[in-house]
Length: 367
Image (tube, rainbow, N blue to C red; front, side, top):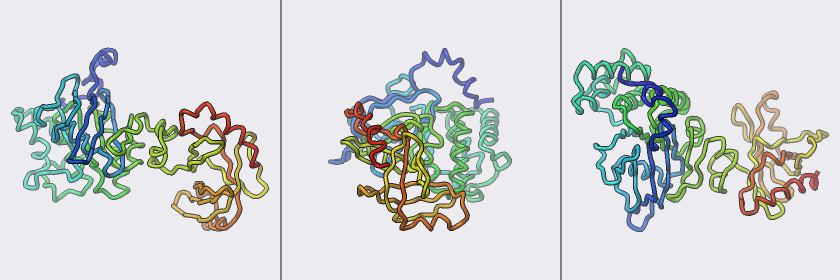
């Protein structure tokens, strides 16, 4: 079997720990005229990680991926793959493969021929090539479709063929440039889980580019949030979501409520807010502030309440739809109290972090 599991590919964890990282960038810069696309990025991705580059359009994430692939040359800095400097190495000599959003399948070739194309170019014997193609088809759950042409497949199936074509070559790093962007929402969500399953099975390092926060949170072992060619924060999804390093990260990942009290700026997420019913008392130690519900937005499983605080800020609170249909709408225009646990907030200004206790002092002043 040519496509191996993570254990077979990488051996014991003790040995893997001695290996260099799958990818290392140091001081990588890239400009297009007066536009600085990548502004001195330092990044390390470990072997076998599912690592995501997340950011809005123009943040530099796709340019960074193209630099790793060798499609672009950096103006400064170094790029290493498995400890080897490949900064000046052309794409076809790097141990990488790229999956694009448009899949780039050959329309005149069958599914099997598309998947095996790279192996044929490398001179892999026919028998081994066919075995590896069939293994790849089974891995992406397309067994039996090897004789079809791309135009006979659905969008999700074509995406799987493109993935199989990349994985069958066993690259050191697989680069994925928004490969799910053309799929509908339901299929995209299904493919998120499929991609993660496949990555865990084969153990190849994935570097995934997306502007979709849900994709990044769902699939990543770690993620880097980018803006203006720089990395704002790197960490596991739960850390980036729960403890955003900057106001940009707080605003870009999900919905954030940013408040300032006693000179301290902090974030409280909508799902952490409790909207108190009339006569309902908060739990001991909670911060409570009053306001008016300006808008109620029904979004299926939950409802968003846009609340204007008496102090002037606008907050978003979220509730699961457990009540009878339409009950949420009765809150529009009503006065409410929002409560949250101080420990569920995160201070944005780290230099003032020592003043975090001031949040606790504020707990009861609005009660």
